[in-house]
Amino acid sequence: MLNLKDLGTIIKKDAPLLASVLLTGGSPLTAIATLMLNEIAHYFGADATNIQDLATKISGDPESPNKLKEIENRHQEMLAQYQNENVDGARKRENDMVKSLGRRDYILDFLSIVVMLTYTFSVVFISLKPDQFTANPLFYTQFALNTIGFFTILRYYYGIDFWGIIKGFLKLK
Image (cartoon, rainbow, N blue to C red; front, top):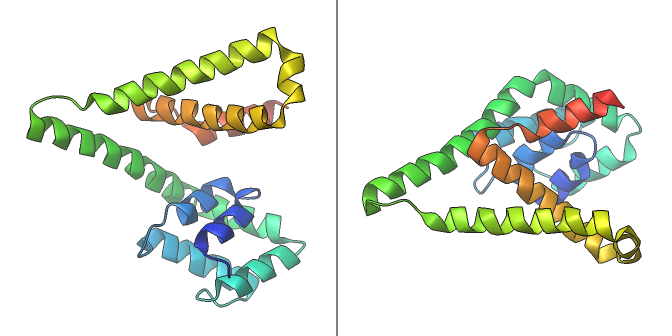
């Protein structure tokens, strides 16, 4: 039985911003996740309450990448605002913690340093020993996770937009 996270994973390759709303929709679903789910179901002629049916129709439709991208493009501003509100919520939590404890929460800083050092080590390792990198497929997964962590930290501390970087990179190619 498929759930909403499985559906988000199916959609992710064609419309990553749209999928992120479904993947972080929570329980109960936020209003924006419900709106996007209903719109996707409408586009594919499926029932929004039946995730299995919706996933089957998306997977079976050869035009699904175009349809999903169209939905994402139409609601891009709202989806980006939702992403920014998630970051703002994390920052608000940190400010509330400082007010209640009288000091900053250094656990987030410590974890950020660990992720940044791990990412830096990964890049150096790939540069110095590329043959060992290609020999171990698990390292690809670890490097991808480190990269996601790296961009998440950049977004949180510096407000850098991860999807904007990716889209800019893809336009250059």
